[in-house]
Length: 267
Image 1: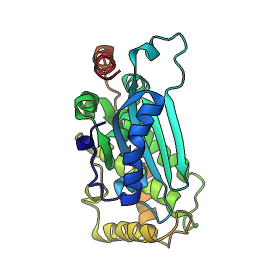
Image 2 (image 1 turned 180 degrees about the vertical axis):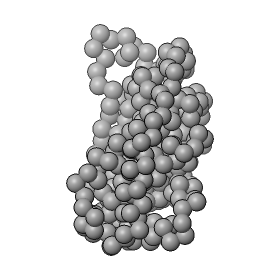
Image 3 (image 1 turned 60 degrees about the horizontal axis):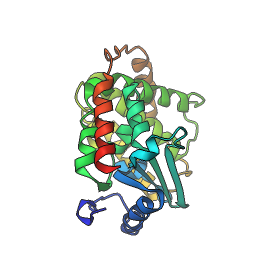
């Protein structure tokens, strides 16, 4: 693993955590016999919405040696390393990531594409990133985000207390689903573009929520912000009626070509 490929300008990442991750990735490669293609901060810290006690959630994708893929029972496609209460590291075999994307589920690929970057092997990751297009991801990602927001908020009553982690997760999912429903361009990574065009008072309340979240624990109770909840309720009703046609289908050939190329070059 070349030091030049490691990116350390991640603004939302604790420098100590960044150092631990940077030191751990070569050790993971050696211990598990893999080549890591990309590692990102996939949790709330990755998009600038962490709380004081939000754990760092490092997601990485890797490729194994060709002989591993030729086994009759090659084994699990995940590497899970709960390093500490402050840091979790989870790796996914790129074959499983590409298989899910080819079937229309781009969540794992999107998680790796977004958030602060700990490590990137451009010559391996760039082909995977090229699969993430609005045409491929828009419909499935909209449904996933909308359904997650509805499911997580189903038991809420107006004005009831919610903790920061749960409340903001619903807000963030709704903002992203709203973007997917209303726009055909790529989904942005940060919060700021998602709230452009909202009323000034509502934007101010969302900023207030973010600032309060950064200074509190995940389980702290959200202060009353009725404007946000009214917005959430109205958006859920609006998005429930959105019908977005699924993509015509994703050809298997590009995914097969990318996977075989990665195994030949890095396996």
